[in-house]
Length: 501
Ligand code: SF4
Image (cartoon, rainbow, N blue to C red; front, side):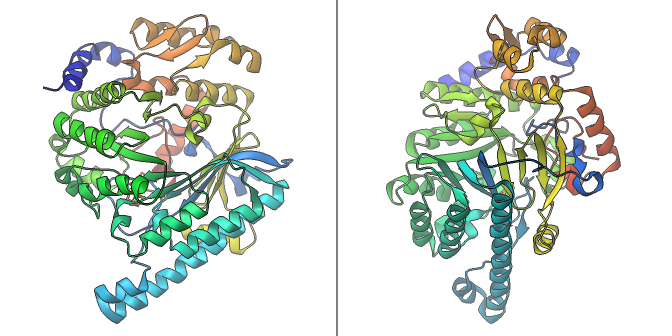
């Protein structure tokens, strides 16, 4: 048995499941969900019904930026994100594969993507004009699969962004690619366009290196494709920073094949950052149906905890730091968009563009239109595509800071909370702090509060318990009314109000 697995097994013995149960934070596969934002989607209001203008009184600003490209060449069975499956927009390749009919379909898809990009650019210009100027601290183009865009579309999108947004040289510019891009006939031109556009970080989505695990996820690539791409991004295509997105708890995953994946990514691919999230279920995802049919085919909750502990051990052993709950960095990445979000500096805003993008601006948490059609319609009518939003109360801003801060290695600073909100963390949360400290899940000292290593295993549940009752009740009430497979539930990234049936 490897030392990482051995150490992880020893640590797993420290998990007191009875006490987790008593505290109400033990999880089942179906209950678990990550704290992605606060307040979450179900607790936000329809902006038209409530007459909310998220930019009211807003002036020029410096923000992080997220841009969503909602097209994918396949449907991964675990996916929670908004995407539209398209046929290959590369006409020449489609002709080779499928003849004239495919060429026709491909042309239609190409037109569809062009229409979307034109609206996306329009949204960027509209927001920039509305606030009177945007400076980007960082730009993240995610999806979906942004690497389905052609080299020309990539260059055109970035040149539009730079026309309307000031992008300092030091800004982090990150772009998501799918491992299938390894087979793309246009990949050399695409990576050249990305480099010329100033992209300095590449994130490879949905990484899976073990083919027996990969085959259960409806992915269109092999483990070898992923490893080859991760290596070539640095050695052939000239990117200094490569991030990989991993998942823990899928079918056929074992401590041994999980450790082998990590070894390959660390030793051979030399990834700079790895995100490792536990598998989560949404009623809309195919993988949930497989789970309901046969839960025994999935790692148990105990095995999932072990996978996470193996990741913690493995990355630590290789000199990575865990600056955020599920993020492992080769070097500390203070400028990373996610770090800033979870460090929750109130001046850290996020503007989002494209359907289902969620942002935080001018004191509002907001969420864009839930699909391509409603998004395109809004823009073509000259309206911003904001769908749901809420202006946070002072108490909710405080809760947001605490909830997000708990996900960072430093935790939540008591003095900072007092200075910023005039609130004493120890008094406001005396119950939570004492019960989680007693259970060995949280540390509290003069400086602040932070999760312990075992606490990280239930970090989402612990953080969520620092939220307000108003937000929890509204999320739960809305969840009861909404279709579990509908858009509000599908894009509700929070354990409270997470409903599968
Ligand atoms: S996981 Fe990524 S590539 Fe797969 S369907 Fe979802 S957005 Fe598309």
